[in-house]
Length: 303
Image 1 (tube, rainbow, N blue to C red):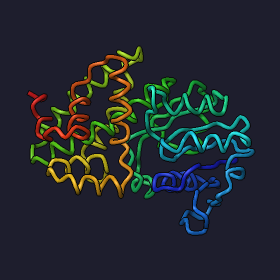
Image 2 (image 1 turned 60 degrees about the horizontal axis):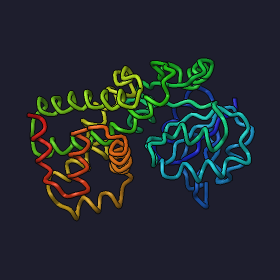
Image 3 (image 1 turned 90 degrees about the horizontal axis):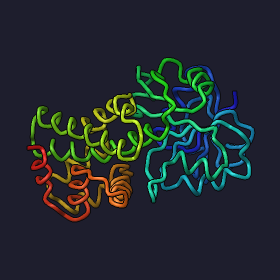
Image 4 (image 1 turned 90 degrees about the vertical axis):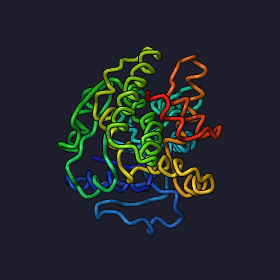
């Protein structure tokens, strides 16, 4: 099987380690001028030639920042031919467009799946037991992904859009969990917060005429609880820094790190406003991060 990964960040390397541990070789694409700088498992060939990474492949994993998806897909387009595209990137674009929709438009294909779950890159790289949800309209592709990931894929669904939204929006709410932790509230308060978050996500999905059952998937509640409870999560860590009220440190952290929750917050808030969908917790997070509302005001909506 001819496999490639578009991206060379920590999660891309972790997925490469998992796939190669199951006996497969693959190609990894990087923007680095010198691909030899990228440290990867033995069965991985690194290239900065998008043609090499796209042409004549069976499966292509998209594991880059969501803001780079459109330009990267455009560069792939001349060489793409019917490969299964598996989206592991997370984000919502302007006008509420998902990465699935963007990929479908740019590459003129419906051969697309989405993979997500409660997985930190370090745990995947260390080949610890983890669980992913795989979403795809074509169940035959699920069998293909099971061959690559073995038992790490725990569940399958056809609801690609729901999985994408759950995977992206939980990063936003994880910031709030970090704020609560930063104020030294206990687990009871943080779990109360997360239970209210689950209800809010369900209402958002229903308001978009999508099924809300995927909130209970590995990519939904599983990933929400993981990302909202560990300093290994940059979203959670950002929240703890915000709770200290140190604007300079917040800006420095955002400058040095890609914090998906911060980027997704802007997209989700704008989209939900356009759709007139009420989301009190997400709106409060927007007011704290963007309009400088007091971080502790988040606690008020828990009463």
